[in-house]
Amino acid sequence: MNAPIVRSLLENDLYKFTMWQALLHHQPGAMAEYAFVCRNTPAFALADLKAEVEAELDHLCSLQFAADELDYLRGLRFIKSDFVDFLSVFHFQRRFVTVSTEGETLRIVARGPLVHVMGFEIFVLYIVNTLYHRRLGDSEAVLAEARQRLQAKIDVIKAADAELRDEAEFPFVLFDFGLRRRHSAQWHDEVLAALTRELPHYLRGTSNVHLARRYGITPIGTMAHEYLQAYQAFGSRLRDFQKSALEGWVQEYRGDLGTALTDVIGMDAFLADFDLYFAKLFDGLRHDSGDPVAWGEKAIAHYQKLRIDPRTKRLVFSDGLNPQKALALYRHFHGRIHTSFGIGTDLTNDTPQRALNIVMKLTHCNGQPVAKLSDAPGKTLCEDQTFLAYLRQVFSHTAS
Image 1: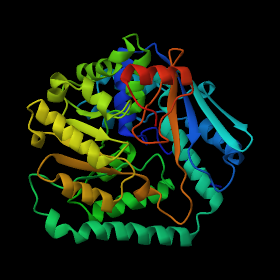
Image 2 (image 1 turned 180 degrees about the vertical axis):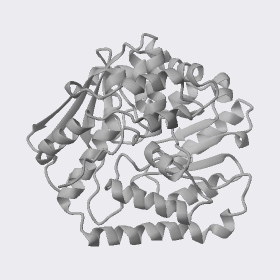
Image 3 (image 1 turned 45 degrees about the vertical axis):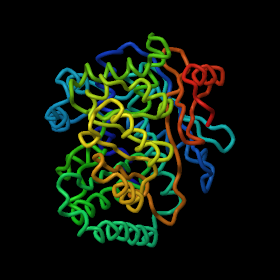
Image 4 (image 1 turned 120 degrees about the vertical axis):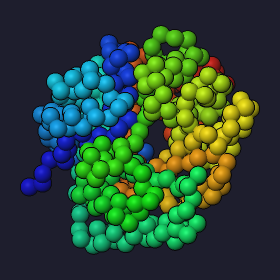
């Protein structure tokens, strides 16, 4: 009999907490709908997992934050006491999430008050991932191969130690961003233990708040697509939604958590809104789609155009990275702007088994469709093609 997959409500990505707090304070009455999507072809029909997913969601909805977990959150300087008080009485409500099947397709939808359903996303993703890999078989041979692959990645970074170790002004900074698509909790624990042991100079944190607490490292995260997407339905002109979202973030965090996500409607449209005011207030930008070199060059050129020294800013890369790609990007931008690298699936789910490419995205807010217009083909998400066309027209965005 396997133990429940969700070990703690703290085992969530930090940016879910930071977005949660901001939206609780600024849009407490908003309604939302999130939908699960598998972007690739699984080894078997995910619909077969329906009963197990239902049982894991039942368990999730029985959990509450423990007192010591709340104390940990309260100790993060950007987390406010009234938000922790809210979390002290919060629990997920099962009536807000439904699981169904359509042929071989697994359908999971969370629908209800935004501040009650937005937290389901990461838990749903790693529940499905864990069940999927259990069904494929967690054999010792699979884990042995995963350990070899992990060690090879560590060795890639260690091989560059002479180049990286003494770089104080523009250090190589690595984060674990692998919670949502991990192979299993046990493997994630093993990965993070290995990274903290073997790469202490370079690993600066993890998005997994539970493991950040366990290993005494920094929890990492600011905002995700859903935060900006939600502002498409919050009453401002659609053309102004990014500015409204960024302004809401500034007012909530007053200088903390200053990394802005750029690809909700594409980098060009983002930079058109990222004026001198925001460029001075935010510490840097996060990349999550499109050519990372071209994106970084656009960011540097934008700062220079605004007469801001790029060397005072930071670019965070988080799209499909591995150590080799991270080192290549570090070398390309070294000395011109600070860089950090969040590696996800390549760290926590690189095994001989076929990994899932799954997401659970905000599709509607306040009864209106919302959309992400990605710089990468296949990442654009919207269920309403009319709204998608309108959004493209407003922002002069070409289809992808």
